Image (cartoon, rainbow, N blue to C red):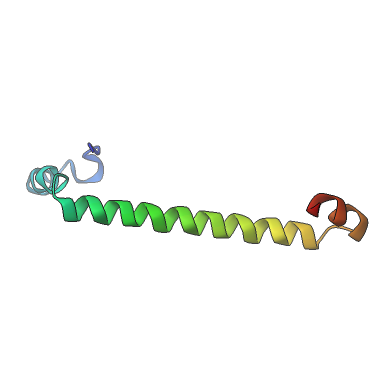
Length: 67
């Protein structure tokens, strides 16, 4: 996985350290765990927003959307 150097481009030592870190299995696992947490959070947030939208609708419309 290649990530852009980005915010630390002004810090050559940090950039040099980051490149080999990307090849370490533990670093890859950390990134995949973070992605999983973000995905689960997004799914939960969407469900919460959707349920709030449904509760504010009149009953006859809400029942049509839930089925």
